[in-house]
Image 1 (cartoon, rainbow, N blue to C red):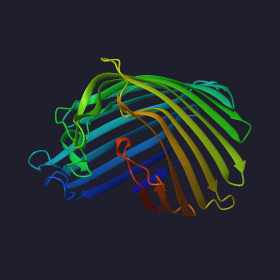
Image 2: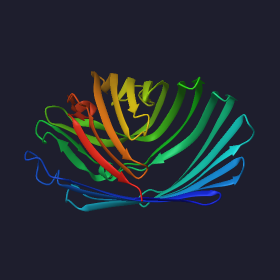
Image 3: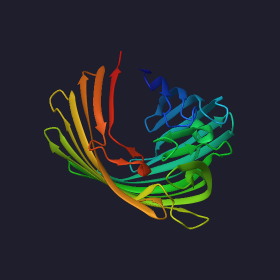
Image 4: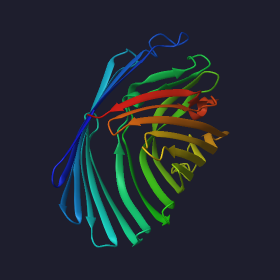
Length: 352
């Protein structure tokens, strides 16, 4: 649930969410290893204040609590509490330059506190073209599953099991990116981005037991480097139709060994077609196909795969929305890439 409000120079919001996952074990699993109840609470408050004609200040705080009864040798209940405060400023120096400094403070009950600064800048060449640059740091504490979880797919015998690691450390990253954005008339836009990131104690997992019964475990990688290029182009055909094309190239390596990191694709392509009913804009249909090539599962196994997906959304004014969609429509089954078949989803939203 979200509450939004505003006054003469301020826009504020308060949101709260709760989620719960109950999962029963597979018959072939070791008893207890897959019985799971997972509860998550999230509360966030934020305010946006326009301090002057050329400055806007955004600040807020967030709380997240996770609680799970997951197998860790004795089926005990584990929980984590995390708090964060953030401050973000948009300062328009002149009609050409926009600066966006930011800082975030995180506190985790198991890992203590961490502060992450960030600085961005946008230079407007014209109304339809601009350069953007950003440098910043970030921090992520391990999740409850990564610390203590144990879950399987396909049964523990002949399937895959992933177990947590209570000795994990938080991952910390720093990096920069630069991008160029261009609009061509009122119907076409394009964006090109280059990024370069480094992580310390990156959280990943590795297989510790060979097939047919695979066992994986989360662990920290001392240092990793990732660089890549992203390109996107969008065109509005009119009558409600919009086509979006996207391409990502990624190179991620373990700095210690110099070897490429597993579980990522070198190339990712996406083509998306959207239609919004042009009169009342109450109906939307979005279909997209995503291709992965040169996805490295391990040093000896590389995959390529594509999936087709779509969603249908119906709105009634600004207050009500329902949607339904199918991911992986053609039921591709490739567990090494996280595809376990077709996924159906439905949802609804109400504003009052």
